Image (cartoon, rainbow, N blue to C red; front, top):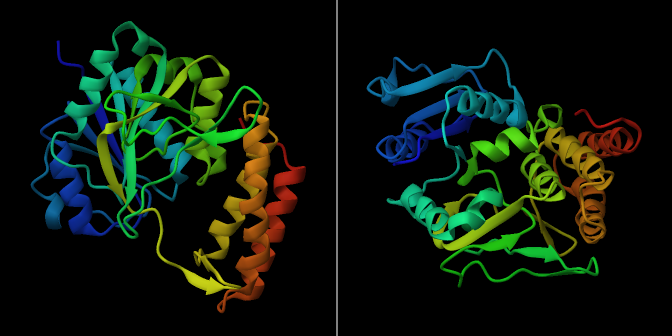
Length: 298
């Protein structure tokens, strides 16, 4: 029996051609496509969307953020008795046969897959051509390279996977619980994966399926390092949510130490970027204060 899969796409001011290509790629392979428009820029009756009558549209009244949007899709998957949720953001375009490849890996795992919370692809940055590195903590809480998902034609256990292109079974969505809607954006996928692992579920990744995904632009060179020039609001969420994540008991100690270095670089380098320096500095400081003093929602 073919599993019923709900595909969701979280969009915010998307490139219309890129998003329509993603939807067209998904429609033949899934039972339903749900597009959540967080930017109030999509008119389903106009442009490239007008002929996509099989798509379910959720036109949010405001920007719900990634976490709340994923929760809408999660609830739709559970209420609609779907077997899986396949999530994407607007910056990904899966190859033909993408879902079939993931489902094949799932089926070949047999009973072991009953304990899987998520199955993600190997990810390559479309902008730089680089493979997204995979690390996990060992029994001694040391951060070590994971079994290489690029050479694995089955699936290997990892600590977390990115949301885009990830396949979640309904059983895990129900057992692990909602995504952290109050986190808005950044670390939402990481937190859910670590929460799942803390509850005894496995997070898996396979090299048999590869996803090209836009992870980030080259950025601006500051003190010899390439730094992504995020807007101040995004810097706030990155700093705050990283600190919230480090305070979570679900996060292994090795990863808490690992998160310190990029957090320190962000606090140091973002205010040195050529534009909006004061706004970036204030956003980083505000995120740090809230990350340390506020209680994480959920």
